[in-house]
Length: 243
Image 1 (tube, rainbow, N blue to C red):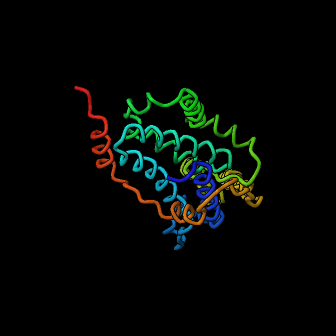
Image 2: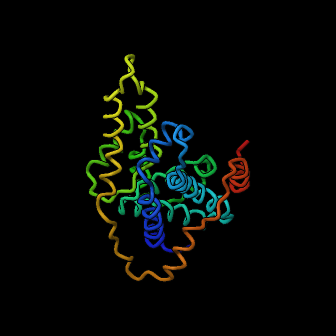
Image 3: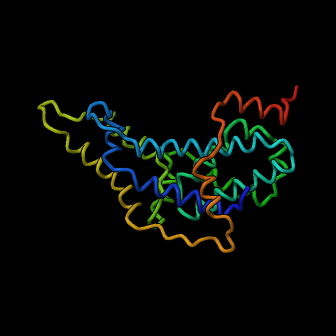
């Protein structure tokens, strides 16, 4: 596999293009129901699929690595890729990689995890803290406010926030008037995305990067297995269950 920083760079450049292509109205169509508007949400759908793609890419690569030593190296590499994605403010990919590493087919490989260097284990634990969903993802939201744009948002949480607002309050009041408080809350939440996209992405190409075009092609067309049953079977072959 390619270098960690080069992969994170290529993933971020590609994800940024997908993120910028989303029209903010697509968020509303997604939440209110696209059938009501007769509209499509192709760009948002593509970006949401990307999250699952990256997540299952991590699981697939690890579960298809039969050698224990190489599996440890790969696990370490994915944690480093997550670190660079966080550094590049690609939070969507960061969360996707972390969720891939937390997938049961990967997390159960205790013999593999045990062989990770202590420094990498500590890094992973710190990243898990950022993913903590308690108190409505308080740590993530606090971290987000400290970052400067551009930021590639963790999209599933933004959709969840909008859905919570929509389902938690009526669009029209009893008098048939528009619920402007609901509209204000939706607008405020969507403004987060506008702020995150308010500056262009200007990442320096990693020093000494080679085969960048090949890497870019690789991250655009990831070969994945997204069948959890198959992944679990592969995982059990790598480290059979203890009786």
